[in-house]
Image (cartoon, rainbow, N blue to C red; front, top):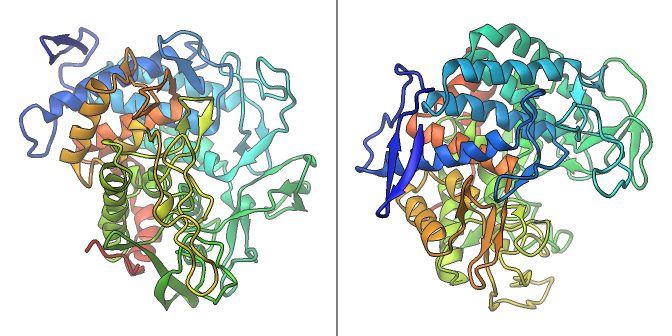
Length: 514
């Protein structure tokens, strides 16, 4: 399929490579033109992923320059997983042929079967060279040392892609299933939890090193065999986090106890001034699930109540929802919290900060290499992710404990990240399309590979590059929107639903849209 801009109108034409019988277009009642616009975005986004992927190994680079030259010489499990589901998305949207998709995925899986990983757990290291798949021990370009690390959340996204490949391409099911079955998420799970664990429910560590790294680490081994490893000192202990994908998988595989789903915190507890470092004083009540008492805390924001993410970013809130039907399964939790998170981002960008645009998430930095952006008012940390270049801190105080230092901030040069808008498609598509049209046409943050990774709304400064992860988020969001949540259908099988759905259905957040 190819796209051309003629007199301001995007014209989509099928390419000779596309399969005539491939399903394209929307299965929903879209206004005329919406599907065409989204398909055009997918065509261009795919071009960047194609350009940054090594044809021999099938591994995508972490990023590529805006003119689609100079892919980086590093990649991660998340990048690889996102590429695999992007191939399937491109196939199902009719952008590439079935045979092209098959060859691409076969190359990727063949490489993954051979590259070095931590054999007792089956987990993949966090950085490899996309050119030949070797594990990185020095950073390309600088030569700085890399301490090989195995990340729980990054391995979660790669494992998720194996589930999708196995269902979407039966010819590769054996390879994808074997890779998936070899990965044991129990290696990341601390049954005793950490400082914030409640009533014995365990938590996942951020990951581990095989040899002692510089700085903080905790020796141990949560697996069934193998030598001692060195865990991160932190756990993933908040509910609204992209890291919950690893918990879902571990529970579905029987490697992590079901109670762990309730072990993470909605907010920090309301216990006087012990947690007065968090952004605001939560309200809520305690409920018990599977014997685990859970404080169902929420924050208030512009008339809404919602469970916050650590940094208030769209990535934390909505990335797992690309694959797990959280809103469908959780009518009293995610079905309210996800649209509230989206509305908070919109109201912050358009009203509170007055940027004229919205969508805030970690991304390539227009003023540097990488930065974490979010709506701090719906993030837990008082020094969490800012939404502007100036890193404006919002501090309304903490009743009885901390005086307000900046309750009515003046925001500066806001930085919006297009992939955050795509994540919001299921919850406010008209607002998403309007926002993206402005970012493309008014801020000129669009190139040969689709939307550039980020743009500053006041100065117009563009992060003139594409990040593999963010482009794969865009591809997944478009495919789900146009093909009736097809990636979720690939990802979820009967066993997964039986294990996970009751946990999500039982959950009751204190979230409220109005």
